[in-house]
Image 1 (cartoon, rainbow, N blue to C red):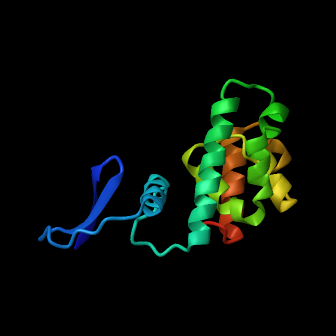
Image 2: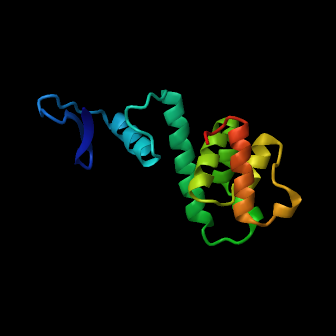
Length: 150
């Protein structure tokens, strides 16, 4: 069985558990993609296209910018109008499973983006303002629409 280990801050090696003779060094770009995909919970052997990884990286970077800048804001409109958030909306359908996965880990102000991208809203009127219930509605919608798995 093979595993990836970090040699230093800038170098990884893929090595066989029983032998150190099979070391492989990765390019800087591959290392960066590996770090981000691992950080996002993707197993390094899961086949992913370059486009999928680029989408993940873009979403992750935009999300981090948005969260950092809007952490102390209370206005939903100001939070949703941040340029990074608007760029996530601009990613369109590709952003939906990423947003829903993020909501599973940490509910947040993703409802505006989801409504903008999908043109719909599965949240019932009596659920409005209840973050947990609103999140559950969107997660269930994502499962029903095959954007995410159960």
